[in-house]
Length: 514
Image 1 (cartoon, rainbow, N blue to C red):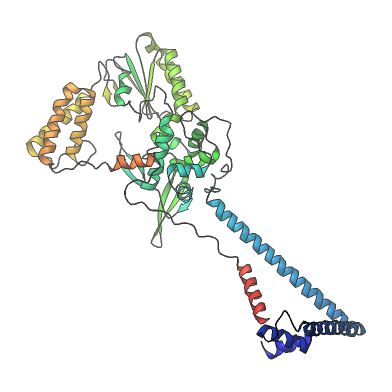
Image 2 (cartoon, rainbow, N blue to C red):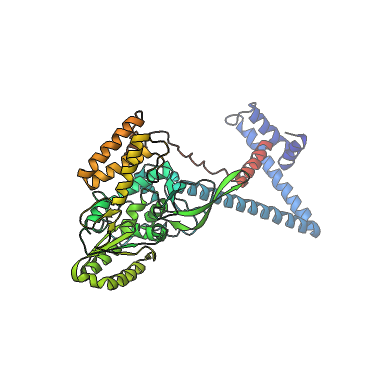
């Protein structure tokens, strides 16, 4: 305590009271017990002196109007400053309370997932009953718990970013059968884990239409082509830009139609879609800029199942049309096939016109350059198989396969190619298995020749480890897949409000001064 502070204390009370307080503080005069009368006398005298000093000050002030006005202004200013300080404290405490409440709410809820997709995240009710066999999910927290990831990781995987420094897909191109290149977007392991859960626990539990044969259990190009064997006419149509046609809004609508509220349908749709992005390098860092709306990516495990479910109404309408006109209908992904015999062949024009109308009404478009009408007098193909009299691999393809087999048997695999693959041995083995699936009798000898070549030229070739199956099994069960898995860091609690920190320091200085 400084000399001036000591003088101020004496001036505010009396010298005897200050001495008494210091003796009590230092332990020379007990605060309780004897001699209490003397202490009370000193305190009463000090209180009387304070009242007298205040009366003298007021009397001096009233005697001088200018001084009285200054004193009033000074008092009002002090009161205003005290009220302002209290208002600052209340506002700072309210901000701090809101910050901590938001921090705690983020642990159990998703309130924002980016521009254009966040409205509806608060909606947790729906009038559509949940489809039979699907897991009930009340909100995003329940979805994250079911997948087996923290809510922060679900938010990270589903967030709709216009510009980002990370990307959840690895993109590459593969050659198309008809020419050109096809963009494939393969999800990174963390997103693929969530997509496998969605596929096996939601999408795979919804029955498909009988006309859908693509990417479905117990169905294949074989079952698709078998519907059209021995017909007088076979008609193939192709849906143009099939996957890009399926936007985020349509995928979200699918999950809502299955009985999920928007609070769940929005993150589900975001997990299964992605925008086309442009990769830009700035100051040595990569950035991914969204170039258009979110679409269904080719390469995600959920995409084929979503296309089949969205096309259920399209399949129903086309199946009804085909039956009315005497045709048979089936669909493999974006390939539509109709076939008929007898009098129904005369209705091809009616069929094609009606198909175009139904397809456009369902939000798709028929590719104008890929519609083929194949009569019995020509080779009729459905999903790569000949269906004129029986299911068979096209003869020209078999001739090329036998020719490559013979060349590899004579001269070895160096410089040989079959199909788009770079490894001719693997390509020959794959096609051999395909030939056996179509026609076991004629395909078995071809496969045996390919297996002998594989044993001769790739004896140390190891089988793929069952990591993919183990990964999918764990992901579908909501468990952490084997291998190293990155875990996002917990968000730290909000920092103390700077106003409260400053006020606390000021109060600490005031207490130290007293």
